[in-house]
Image 1 (cartoon, rainbow over the protein chains, first blue to last red):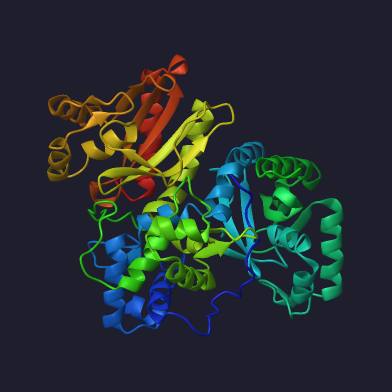
Image 2 (image 1 turned 45 degrees about the vertical axis):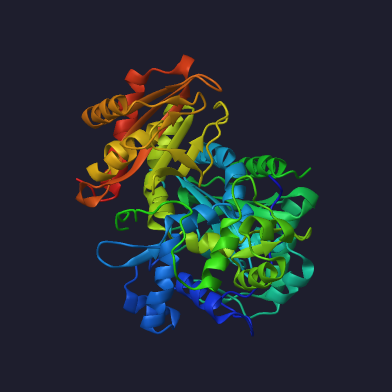
Length: 262
Length: 262
């Protein structure tokens, strides 16, 4: 497998100024689904995509014929398995996951909690994989879901090793810590990023909804470019970040080697 | 999560007679990628999709603007992470995987080999997930890849519990065992399917490229409809199908319960 390519810098939800409206409308239908809306009626599909019901139905039928959408016995639409098949070829999604899987398994076995793998997409982190032990505390992260760069373990790692111009762009924005909504000081974030680069690790503590600790490390692709971030999320009472750090770094280095990094 | 919906019965690669050619052409570009072609030049994309290079480029640019395709530094196209994100919402792909993951992990830990999860799509099985131990022997199965129904563990389970009309359709076809290319006797396949239904298990031995044994069990969704098949693939010398059967069935039942089956 080749290493994951450079992420195209693209703001989420932005629409190009010109283009083929039919293809864009078809893509808007797909974008109407999210983790809380996996099944949509025609009316919901129309409302969420902004496409009138009659056109939405016509387009949905085209997408169904190919297998990009499916329709259940109750008439609701969902994303089709054929789209999932094609999309599983995304080098930065399934390809990365395939290389990372056995190492993530080792880490999950050792920590008995959650192991996350994320890549940067535009100005957020996207969760590419999650392995969770049965007895792990519940977390809100879903594969395919998004996480902020400035306040999560994987996000800080992806930001710390991103190109400097992109880091400055993020540092120039007004940022807040969720869920407390307290402002992030750019000077402090800059110090944190320098520390993450120096240590090769990001450690983030979160109090709500439950106290937990995340320890994250960078995964590099061929050429030394950052490809992904790997993290372990554990309840605070079990956390020994001093011991977790080497485990996460070791697994991240193994995945990097699998991607062709030296 | 709702249970996976009924698979739309659709023959692979079939094209609807009418429809919007632009949407169909865009989908053809996506379909040009497969597990052996994750990165394509414009010329390859054009040749594999049958779309002239100039239109292919224009369409590819639309798909790139949205994030359905990405383009590397070397100019080659690949499936984009944004498409992977949306596709991860497919109930029969990622949704099923999320429910199955911890049970598959248990099974992989116990067997130290490969655990496969597959669903039926048209007249083939599609591999939705694979967990493999480090020390597991190499196998050719890829997530998103396809397997025949009549000669694989997961395939036989999916076929045995499919609606009778569909089973008859498959039984009426000329079928062969790969890679030996020996004909499958319909009477024998019919007996095998009855046995799989009776035992709740399919056991398949394969001699080439290495001797291995697959033990597969059905996963049911709410309403008792078959949703998926779960299997363990082990080298023949390690295989104790008598002991593997209960483990696979137990994990499959746990996943079924997670999908709302009783």
